[in-house]
Image 1: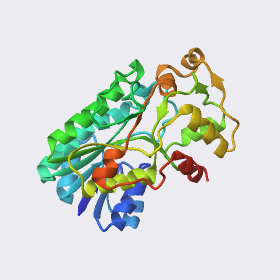
Image 2: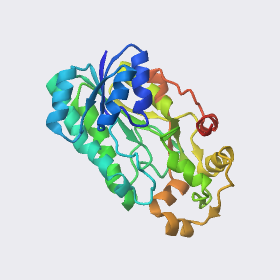
Image 3: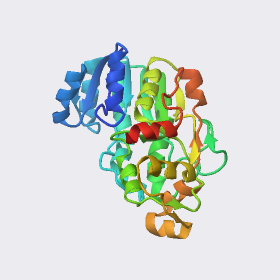
Image 4: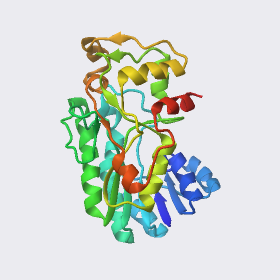
Length: 306
């Protein structure tokens, strides 16, 4: 299969391209950096230096590649260091999830590509009800600092399955692994990430190579729609944050009340720490035939830190 991968040098793309090549696919891989093109070529992919917001360039690149599937992994999170104002930190990524998505869908239509696999994330979507949400659960209202980010996610999730015959959206849990959430590990080691309000918020994690293997599965099979991609072990902050500190060789995180957390980190972080909900991966397991190598963050964190 000919596969056109955008965001190929990002945290997930670095795993996705080798996995696709190992599975026998022909890969055209995009990067915004000319300096990274040689590495993609050396890996066995056909590199394209591309700005995902340049509609004409995106259409031309896709038409030239004639792909059977397009993978939308474009983000701009390499310099992410804070979640206090999510909309500010995700402004460029939100544009890639709206204008960039439109550009790729226009390219798919022009090239006659039926299958498009796009990524979103679950962090802004849920803060009430069951601890592990399924794909059909309605979104909760976002906090003000994450409203534009959730709107961009909604846009991808509503637009992609409706725009192409085989539109799939992978809703990833929180990435971890080398290059994926280094700021989180740094904050834990520096004692800058306390447990807020008892740490009752539920998180779903996914190690980056596991996220890539789910993406390969979605390229090769699966009905159109949304699939949650997380590990088997959604967990409260009160469990995973002290454990991460332990395996990282750091002091246990401090415990602070909600009022202090709001002052230090803002409403979005407090919600994530206290009321956020995780996701169920049952649909992806059943319909994509996928399972994570790291079924729990407990094992995955140890491998990451090592």
